[in-house]
Amino acid sequence: MIALDTNVIVRFLVRDDEKQAQIVYTRFKQAESAREVLFVPLLVVLETIWVLESAYDKPRKEILDSFDDLKSMPILEFEKDQVLQSWLSEGSKSNADLSDLLIALAAQSCGCSEGMTFDKKAAKSPFFRLLT
Image (cartoon, rainbow, N blue to C red):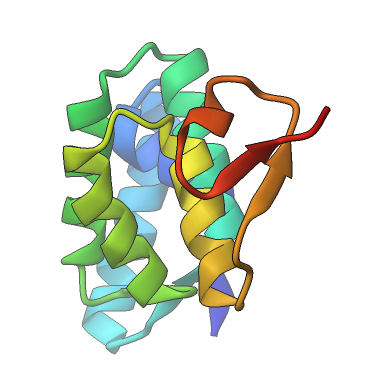
C-alpha cells in the first residue's frame, strides 16, 4: 500500500496548483481502475486541517464536508478510521478546534483519559486539562 502526503490531499481538495491537481486526479483514477487502495495517515489528516484553516481560510463545515467526501472514496483508507468518523460526527456538533478535537479523539482511542495543554481554548473541552 502507498501512503499519501498532506500536499497530495491539499492539491486534490483546493486545486491551487492546476498541474499538480491534475496529476493527483490522474493517479486517483489509476488507483480506481487498478482497485488499489491508498493510505492516509492520521497525521496527514491533522496537517490538512491546519493547512485548510490557516493557509486557505476554509470554513469548518467545508473542511468537515471535504473529509466526509474523501472518506467515501473507495481508493482511500484512513488510519484510525473510527477516530476520523467520530471526529466528523463530533466536529459538526462541537465548537472545539478541529485539530484539538482530532487529537483528543485519537488519544482517547489509545486509552488516554485526559490531555494536558497550555492552550486555554483547548482546556475548555472535557478532555484537556490546563497545565499550570
